[in-house]
Length: 446
Image (tube, rainbow, N blue to C red; front, top):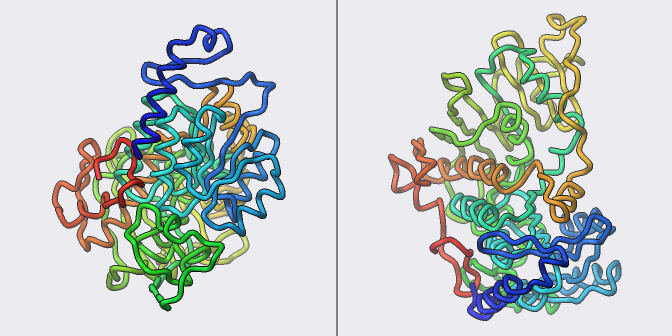
């Protein structure tokens, strides 16, 4: 963390911890932090890091709150967001924004490229600010663990941007699985036909466009000449900034089995795909995760993306007679009494003939007040969020371990407690990374 921000943090802690007036005004203080807690009827003061595309959508969902500061490395994006929130102060560098705004805001939304998630979110958490961060929560496995620990230590309200988690459909699927409708689940197939691949740097020798602060966009990544076709749309194709299709979509799709089956940390991870490229992500991957199953035994969770699929998905027909592989993305729970297929909006018990006349269990999971509203409420009154950094940190770790297994070319025997591969130093190198000075992750040794 930059020394300037670190000094500001210490000053802020001391001020709040010594102020009796702060207690009377409604501050709640943890062992190491003090955090402003607005009353439920007050608007939350929010700063945003990344304000376009998904960041713009997040701001739309939070527009009922008080958006007081905007930060984006792209001046065009920043100008557009300022039209919507003209009273918000504008910044290009998240570090300067957080230093300047730490005593004026209660919460931060991080909607940047993956490689900047943890550096920005960790500084905010260390300043005692609640955080909403886009998926995947982080760019590396080690970062996910660091953010989860920092959020827990400072007792802050957190939420990862897996918005589909708040849907009615996901709730009903969880209830079906947990009611035993398909018996004991032995296998889960997850898939997504999207493709982020073949990132290639193509420096032209020209300077970056005037509206883009290229060095700030690179942030924690190594310095390199400006290359088009990276910002704003294709950075997911590069290992340096994203994690391909698995990194993009895994948290959305694997979220459902994680929730329904109370998964946490896999014991082994194996992956296959095209020959590994050191720069660009692959056209397809298949990953096999082994998990301990509640009640004993093991469970296999499979992932496929891009052009990859599984024979079972081609052979299994949905209620319209189409193969599940035609769904684009989905989840198939395979139990000893039947199967359950789902995507964002559908759920189907299979084979259909076997479940004619089936009566689903009564709903037991309360409706969500809304994914963003969950977080806003948690910031104000401490009510829990469903995708807090403890839950979503473990989910992100698992997703990213699939990319680690693929890049290492080895099956990983995973030690979750020690955060290392028991059998592979080659895999360990992909669990973390180096950071440029000034863009480090708080609580993580680089």
